[in-house]
Amino acid sequence: MPSLKDLRLRINSVKSTRKITSAMKMVAASKLRRAQSSAESARPYAARMERMLGALAGSLAGQAGAPKMLSGTGKDDVQLVVVATSDRGLCGGFNGTIVRATRLMVNDLLRQGKTVKLITVGRKGRDQLRREFGSLFVETYDGIGKRGVTFAEANTIANKISALFDEGAFDVCTIIYNRFQSAISQVVTRLQLVPFPVPELTAEVDGGANALYEFEPSEESILAELLPRNLAVQVFRALLESGASEQGARMTAMDNATRNAGDMLNSLTIRYNRSRQAQITKELIEIISGAEAL
Image (cartoon, rainbow, N blue to C red; front, top):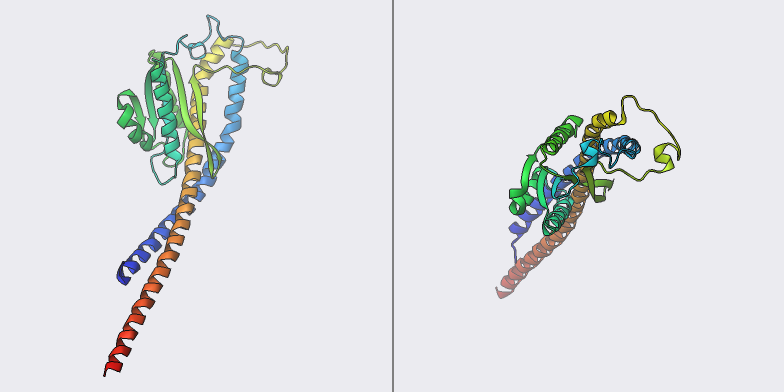
């Protein structure tokens, strides 16, 4: 049974931990408001650009003159997987869910006889996946979004993906990230980046069932310019969603840790008071017994 001194030390330790987790919760809540606002603001632009490109690319898909980023290589033998995680921990299962989804995807592709290459964004994903898939890494990025995700950081990653595609290093590129839904809910999402997935056209997307457009310059030239830009926009959106999800997961994890520390503190305080009362009672009994013996 621990002594009163041990219990006091542990109570002080739990109090210090509760202060830290409470402070981290408030910091995460403050960062979450900014990250959530940025992620939600980027969604309409990214979605609209995707729809516009889908309407523009619908008539060119499968044709000989279509840009390579739209038509692809015609194969899916080499798969590039971009994994978006965080640089820091203490955010619950945020990183674990992404790593598990990546392992499942990579192992499934390897069973199908595909060649897999990995780009990791975030130190946690890099460290966990390196143990099993270290030989598949082609690039790693740390410190992305340290002071808020910027388009320049996303553009750097997009340029690397474009360069690898131009070199013929892969056939299909997919990014895995956590899409922000709420502070307590993040959805693991897989988004194909290359080749551009042409959505099914609807009247809302193509501007009308029989709408006709004339393009200047040509559709091929417009797509050749916009597809790399769309790649950067989609990477930027994924990083913003991942950043908001990280702060939401961290706020929830620190809130749970603070509550657990409070429960543990109450339990330790009760044990301390009972042990102290038992020790005082024992001393009184010894004093009374000694007095009666005299």
